[in-house]
Image (tube, rainbow, N blue to C red; front, side, top):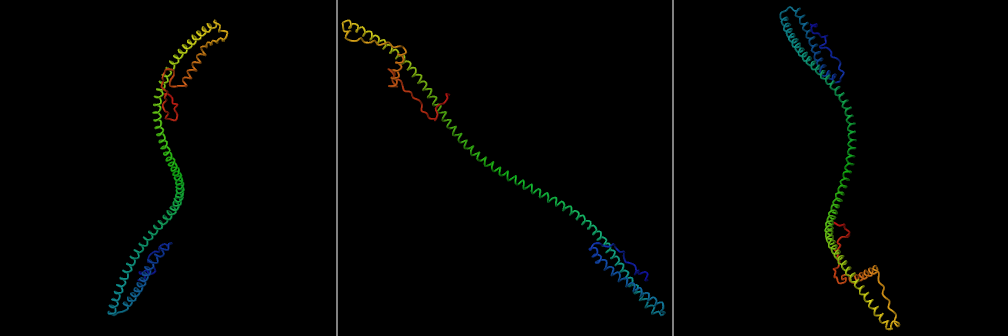
Length: 312
């Protein structure tokens, strides 16, 4: 019976050492209590088997029937107790196997978790590198954004200046339009004045032409009258000379000096004298020359500042 118990054998093979503190804690919490329970059961089995061997030896030495019956009953009790203990041991081994499977599963999960942790660690390192790259990119983008904001502010200032210039240009354009409108109105008025002035000039020109015609007629009449007066003065002079010559023949010529004859005027001198007389007559009475009654020269009033306009 001592050989069957297998007290010297190990209940299960040893696992590999756990480098992790969690594995050591798991071993302490799960495996050690099972080993202690299994070890106590082995001791009880060994003790019961020893007692059973003693009972058998006593049965073999005892010859009486009662002692044999009693010992046989005790043996059966011991055998049932051993069967119960074996059954409990089997259950404990099954539980230990389940715990071992659970531990194996936990180990695989732990290994997978370690792989995940390693992957996450590597991924974290990569994420840190990418984070540094992103930080550098953010710094560059912030710098570019600052430059763009500076450019936008400069463009906004230029736009405000352009808007102010445009507003001033619009104001100046409005004032120029007003001045142009005023100039157009003045030009319309000036055109009306020009039209009226041209009409007056036409009338004045007609009047001047009429007066020039009248003056030429008057000059011809005055020349004719001057010729008649010259002829009359010549005839008067010849008569006077005859009378004086007759008186001198009677003896009076010696007492009185002879009257000088008036010299004849040259045609050019006579014309200049006539023009002088005409100017004197025109200066004395501008409205009446000789026997002709001429109207005065009337010019239209000057409304504008400058009346020297070209003819239309």
